[in-house]
Length: 223
Image (cartoon, rainbow, N blue to C red):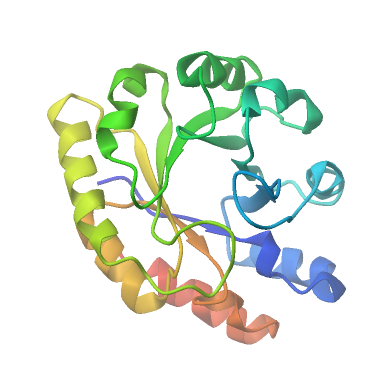
């Protein structure tokens, strides 16, 4: 299995402690910063805007993990400061041209990820496997932090891992987002996930640097 990657949700970070938190993430070896972008249409909420990623790129070298929960993302990729080494997720449910959108992401030097909601079957991304760096499986319905895990998504992760491995795509990452608590992270890892969006159910339930580092360390023990 791929080595686990941690991608803390910046939506859940205390903005008054942003600099301190980024330094803590650096000390903890955090691989990505998860940027939730919501448009109020595809999901019932507004979150981090186009300038947020630009600001983060100015103050940290940690790559960004853009999660575009927006309609027609293919028309809006240019709004974001997508750089080589970043990851970009677009929802299969939100675009009419998923393959084309993934190719456009790859052309920027970023890593293309197809995202699917809890009720979306994995067959929706079968035809774009050659264009993927990862698949983001939503383990809650997107829009708000602090939701309960949709239990059926654990089996979905397992079936997806099996499909990817059987077709020779062992290197494709399975990212999970939603109620990634320490207990659920272990269950998701056992099911085949290897990239974890951590929010208020995980080490971002605190803004204390030492406690956060302990939480990151606990996540690192889950192999």
